[in-house]
Amino acid sequence: MKLLLDTHAWIWALIDPDRLDPDARAAIEHGEHVLHVSAASLWELAILERRGAIDLSGDLESWIAYAMRELPVRELPITGAIAVASQRVPLDHRDPADRFLAATALEHDLVLVTRDRELLAAPGVPTLAA
Image 1 (cartoon, rainbow, N blue to C red):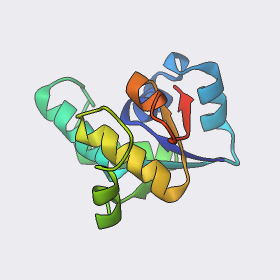
Image 2 (image 1 turned 45 degrees about the vertical axis):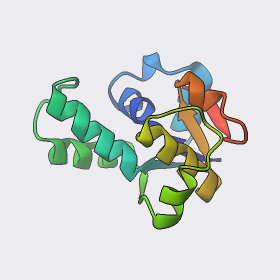
Image 3 (image 1 turned 90 degrees about the vertical axis):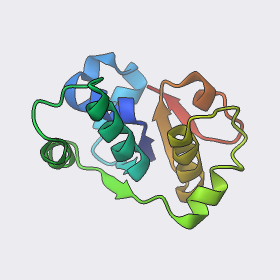
Image 4 (image 1 turned 135 degrees about the horizontal axis):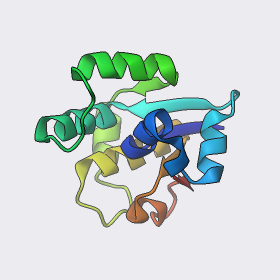
């Protein structure tokens, strides 16, 4: 299975895996599943850190490097196709990061691991509750 981790699912998997749904945790920890994060999650993480909503105990770049080593993930860019598709996703959601995540999951045939109710209910977007 190929998984796309929503920002919060990625953070929880790294620093507090008990917060994850048991099925999501098992899927993330399964060695044969390929894990991905979107550049949108890195952008969202930078916003959270700048606003003081999350304490990463150091600079953002070092934390991201640590996170990528600790839980190997493949970073996916926001391509032009994903940017356009983000506005066509059947999602009643104004958050651009969530639209990018849904479009990325569809573009790359990934299961989106999230706790966001609107994403979980989005028609046609394969999801796994975090």
